[in-house]
Image 1 (cartoon, helix red, strand yellow):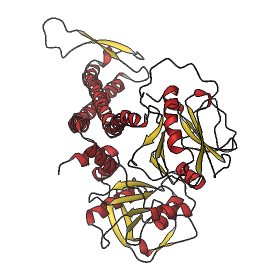
Image 2: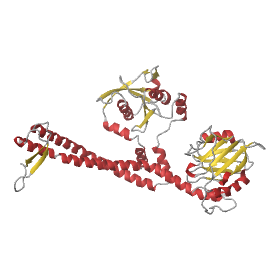
Image 3: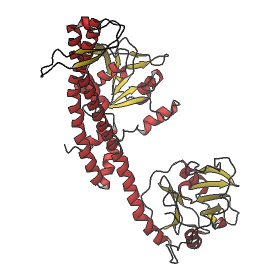
Image 4: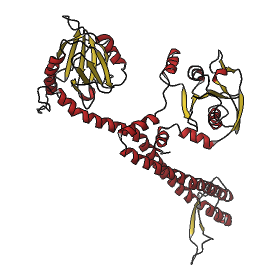
Length: 488
């Protein structure tokens, strides 16, 4: 539960004594919802956590994350200025901190709206919004940069609850109260983010098994078509023309008494013999389907047990293990240099490539389009990386990252060549020729996606469904999680 208006009012007395007139030395970001403002005497913590909105002093700087846009803007505007005002308008869950020079009126106002899930921290100048810590969550107020600030309005009547922090200096009690809660929530969130993909994959596998078994029962029911065809061929004269159903005695009945009648559906547009062939075809299709399902169902069922075991392990894992697994499951980010090169070419936040992982662990990047091919080859790939493309057909550029340089491992090169074939117009061909070289031997042209090779080698690859399936499955965070849980 967040701080109530009464609790905020109580802590403001302590904040006034510690902060009023003090100069802001540095502003830090603890997490996406929390900022820290350091003065020579105290450290102020303001958090817009939806379940733990609060404002109080902390004794030491906690672990922090790199400053984001709003924090950087506050550093530019507020660092070096003094806190000239600190009040609680309307005795609501809102705190306004004024900043200015010595003896000056507040030039900037930092408005902390500590209102639960709609909480936010806004920087104001002359009552105009300059920026906010979080996106606008209010359905009624348009709190966007450049818009006039609209206050919270009349405060609703607050239930008469006793304050949880009655001591004269409540900051220590507030920090002690929320510290364990935040750790628990963070651990729960981390565990949910790690177990979520496993749970979804497990649910999908179980649903697939259920559907496959249902299909198997449908195919088994269709096997009776063989019997229907035999009966029709044995009694063609007994089938009336253009009938949609017929009842024939079961000539193959081996029990006692007269043979039972078997009701057979017919297509009135077909002759009796053609209807028999129609039932034979259905039975043949059912036999093929049963053979495929009898092979597929055990394969899917075998995938369920590792997922269930992984889920149990993750539920019992500690914070350190969960953090390590989450980092391993996340796709490897571009280096700062690569991000700068992409940004200089006017790219969006979307990566210009699909990510895969070779059997040897090397990343494989596959361009999404002709323009993305150029960005991948000339903005992301390095000179020592292997570059591949299907010969004489349109297709994606494929880059096999090679940190150590030298010749690429043969099996990893085959993985990249398999993807080069799959993401080209030769996808359906039984065989394809793949050109490969080092990136430093690739030259650009004026046509997006078209390149010239100073030298290259040719690798002939065949259709390999198993290899392609392994590469596609390896893209998922679930596969990376299971790999991280593997003791080997």
